[in-house]
Length: 124
Image (cartoon, rainbow, N blue to C red; front, top):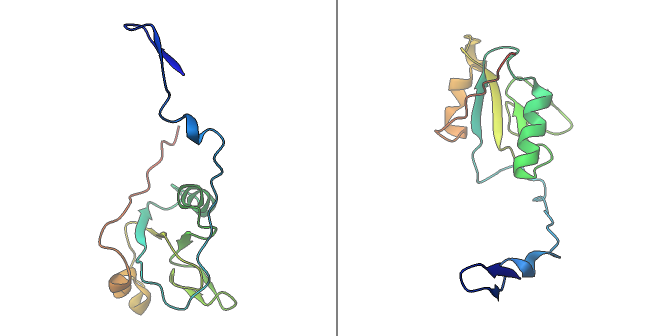
């Protein structure tokens, strides 16, 4: 209970029923096809390390592998250019984009959400 100073009477706390609540997250099972599209997460080389990107996105989304690199691949996880068995929230790539022929991120634009998050960091 809180006390309203104008009335000097106890006022029930509207969130008190949540004090003993347990929050749990259940990741979706693996799939070869996802209905969601990840956001691009471009950054200048060495601005945001892949490990920081992965930890940041996992902390925000609860997805254990929600932040991936466009340049990483894994046969075991069927991972290629951010598409794989686990759901992807963001896909990091280098900005400005360097032409790499048919492996250029723009060739896969239809697989990604049209918005992006630009990764910036204070170097100090």
